[in-house]
Length: 260
Ligand code: ARG
Image (cartoon, rainbow, N blue to C red; front, top):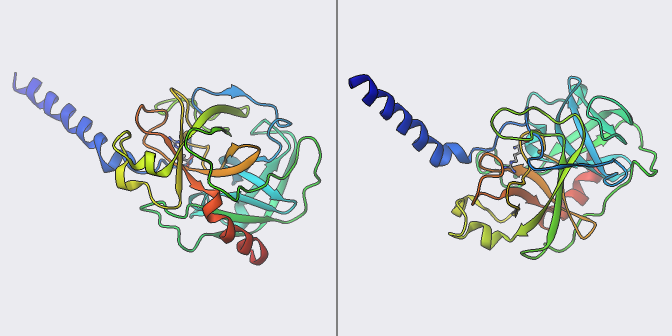
């Protein structure tokens, strides 16, 4: 009886711990893939790249010019360095195909805060230029924040489920809908004041970005509107995926790409 009580208490403790802040901590980028996704060719998403640290995929990114990739600031955190970082472009496979290019320089937003995840955006410059073609192309950054309810798609090689699941060998995408910042911070969802000014959300039942998708694109109307940033677990009801809002951070990117 005593043991059963202890077990019950331990279980309650675990469940409770999962309910608040701890559960809101952005997941580490090592493991994830799109949840509820469908296979994508690279020609359908030629701006999508895989960031590879010490030879292994760990984050996504988007091509905005022949030498500049946009990703999440948290993907550039230690242990990421210029020397251990390469980008695979032009392939929907995480381990082969396309072209693998060494990174020459990285720059994470100086206003990025690893606790709150505000300004979770960064750029990197490639050592040599990408040659654009059907499988490698730049995407334009949105100038206006997409409205609540707009169709938006996410893609990446991240986990297909939060618990267990491994990185997807092939690029996956999922169609979601934009959840505006105000709506995302409202009592309709579970995040409240964790949703800050530089963030935008997107959700669909049982579909979400997940670990390993970070840094990758949220695309709406053919433009880059978000960068995969964080979420509570993945595809959890009432907890949309949270993205860096590109329209709000665009000016920073335009400056940063000149100096990186
Ligand atoms: N931070 C994660 C990564 O580094 C991405 C998490 C996105 N989570 C989500 N539920 N949308 O890969």
